[in-house]
Amino acid sequence: MNQLEALKQFTTVVADTGDFRQLSAFQPQDATTNPSLILKAVQKSEYAPLMQECVTRWKGRSIDELMDRLIVRFGCEILSIIPGRVSTEVDARLSFDTEATVARAERIVELYQAEGVHIDRVLIKIASTWEGIEAARQLEQRGIHTNLTLLFSFAQAVACGQARVQLISPFVGRIYDWYKKQAGASWNEAEMAGANDPGVQSVRAIYNHYKRFGIKTEVMGASFRNVGQIVALAGSDLLTIAPDLLAKLAESSEPVQRALDPQAALQLDLPAVTYDEAGFRYALNADAMATEKLAEGIRAFAADAAKLEQMMVAAA
Image (cartoon, rainbow, N blue to C red; front, top):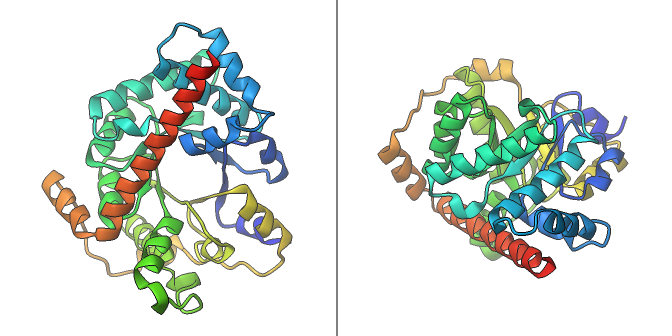
C-alpha cells in the first residue's frame, strides 16, 4: 500500500487543482479550485478553448458573469470526474462585502443548478474575513454550503464554527512560510518538521477544538509544502493536496499513522472559546502572521482574478 492509499484510510483526499485532466490518476473524493489555479489552467493549450467557448457563447454579458460562468464550467468538468464536491471561489475582491458575497455565491449556485448539478456537490469558497464568515452564515441558513479559505488563525476557525459553516481550509504551507521567513538563518528545518511544523500545529489545535466541543464544521488542511506536513495531519477530516504532492504520496510506501483522532480530542481539557465581532477583530489583529497572510492571500487572489478578466476581455 502506498502513502496515498494509506492516507485515504483516515482522511478524505481532495485534489487542489484547476487541471482536471490530472484528477483521474489520483481518484480524489473532492476537488478545490481558486482563481490562481484557473488562471494557470487556461494558459495551457488544452484548456484555452474552454475560456474561448465561454466568452463566445456569453458575449455581451458582464465580465463578472463571464468569470463565474468560466469557473462553473471548470467545476462541472471536475464534477464529471470525481464522485464528491467541488469548491468554487467567490471573487476575492468581495472579501469585505457580505451582501455582494452572498449575491455572487447565489449566482454561482444557480449556474451550477442550470447545468444539472445538485447543490450538495458545490462548496462556495469565501475568504475568512469577518464579512466573509457572516456571508457564509447567511448562505448556510439558505442551504448553500461553504468552504472558508485563507484561514490562518484559531480565531478565524472559532468564528467559522460559530457560523456553522460546512468546511474550513486552514493554510498549512503559508503559515510555515511565514515562520520560516521570520526565523531567517536560525530556522532549523529538521527540528520544525512534521508535528513541530507551525502550520501543522495550527491545524491540530483547530481540529482538537472542533472535536472536543462537537463543532460539525469539517477541517480540511490546505496549502502544503511537503509530504511531511500531510502525513503529520493524517486523520484530519479532509486534506486538499496539489497534484505534484499527490504523485509523491503515490510513489512512497513509507508508513502513515493516524495523527489526529476525534476520540483523543474528546479527552482533552480545553477552554471553550467564542468571539463577537470586536473580539474576533482584536484576536486576528494580535496574530501578526494571520493578519499578514490573510491580506497577502486576498491581494494575490484578487490580482489573479483581474488577470483572468483581462484574458477574457482580450479573447472576446
